[in-house]
Length: 125
Image 1 (tube, helix red, strand yellow):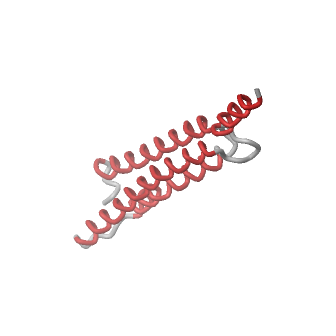
Image 2: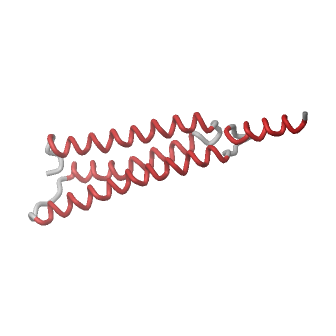
Image 3: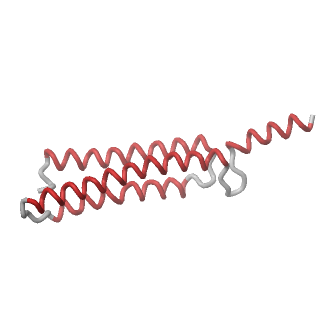
């Protein structure tokens, strides 16, 4: 009887945090989404390098609004990841998965909006 109870407790503790601690399942969620956010940062760095290279090859200075949007595109994944990390510190792995998934989607929307504004809104020069 005690063996069954300990197995159930082990299964539950894998997905449910104790007092103020993350479980293994929750840390797996964090690691997977850290890689997704790292991809967003890599994309933003590529945008910065590409746009700066394009402007400087023509001898054109980058406007201030373009700098602001490029910095926002670079900083947003960090803010969203660490904000999600802070918010999910006492949540179950399933709830943390939901919060991180929404944060990745918001990061993708910000990056896509900046790309569309740069292409059609002429904010990038």
